Length: 549
Ligand code: NAD
Image (cartoon, rainbow, N blue to C red; front, side, top):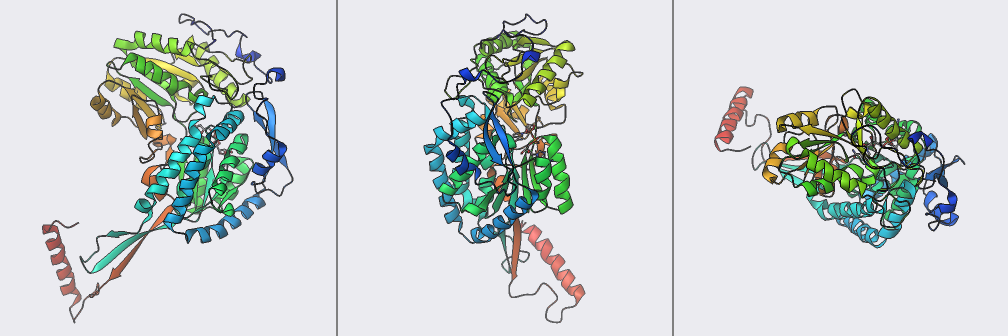
């Protein structure tokens, strides 16, 4: 990283352009490295015409690499939301009548399309979110993995299943998986392509329609995804897109949804949960985190240091599962920190669409302000900046250096609040029980990481960590990319799970159908109620003796 030397543990490292307060305004357009990537107005229109909008109003989105406007996005009103739901509902009735194999074939077509068009999608994601290419290329891949997984496992999750009946042999029970209907999806900006599509694919596979509100800052990536769905043969009206402020459109969506899938902040998640509760509809909430990484005394130091860089600075820390707290065993603390700082110093911060940059931009001035505020607060209260700590307007308007802090204490904002930026706090630990207790402290419970040479010991430790996912000798990608297993948060990090069977069953109602044969479940042949009760009781004793469930 062309960043300041470590300060030797005393105070902020000053960036070449001085204090973060100096950072305002766009980069010099003369040096706009994204100039080679310009969408023609017609190309923008092919995307934005998918937004259900009759308002005549548009709002600009901006390119974080430059801070310059990049496209005008038509805005939806609450009447447009109503229209979107009406269209989606009609489309869903037809879609629910298709077979699992027909739906799977479209998802497999989407899988291949995503791999063919990976470069185009990655360009769009970088351009619109400001992330480095090395943190964007996996977005289409993750969606392709999800499409293939649900296509190949559709029958496993959705076929009608037989269950044990009340009277063995005479009560035949089947459970159907019935689609909920129209699912409302509200997605964030940080993984604008993945988060737009990955939750909707199982909803479609299960026979639902989707009404989707992507974050206003990254509409084009989401709309590109929706176009690819159409190219893969998903009927156009089945996935509706609305655009506008969440507090305005969100309630209108929830009022008409049969289920809501939300990814975003814990504060917004709580509001959405309340609105869903009022309507007695289900929701899954994938929320924030303050994720801990534990580096045990037997960890391979270089591997852990390499993992720590990815864990802390992928997508400039704007990743729900990235690490913001790192607990390192006393025995290896100094060696590990030296390697981690060294690897961080070697990071290249560049702007643009090419490979080569190790970290991209924050998305906006607002994100930058939060990061700056957290660091200023921590430093003012005595935290030490080992490396980083400064904004880098010389690279782009919202660039901030990857930053490693020591000496963070409970009175500091970044001790427990999610920064959602490239900032990691290091803590020493002496015994593992203490490390686990500190990792579990605070309200969040999304993702954790453990580095150790002893897999069995690390897995045993994982069971004591209150997080929905735990990655051993990896930061987050091992669980996130394993679509067969559930992913989501405990406590303030959310409700429900994406991926695996839970990720698709949330979009279905289970319906039990029991067919009673030969005998009634009532006294027969002039049997008294009392004799019937005794016969039932005797049969229950017998079934228990036979070991039946
Ligand atoms: P946010 O909650 O402000 O916004 C997320 C989405 O919700 C956006 O589309 C926004 O327009 C919409 N929204 C905002 N207010 C709303 C309201 N009142 N009603 C309905 N919709 C509303 O989140 P953010 O700060 O932009 O995103 C970052 C947060 O998302 C971080 O906390 C991060 O940890 C979290 N996140 C979690 C996951 C996960 O899988 N757990 C993934 C990505 C991001």
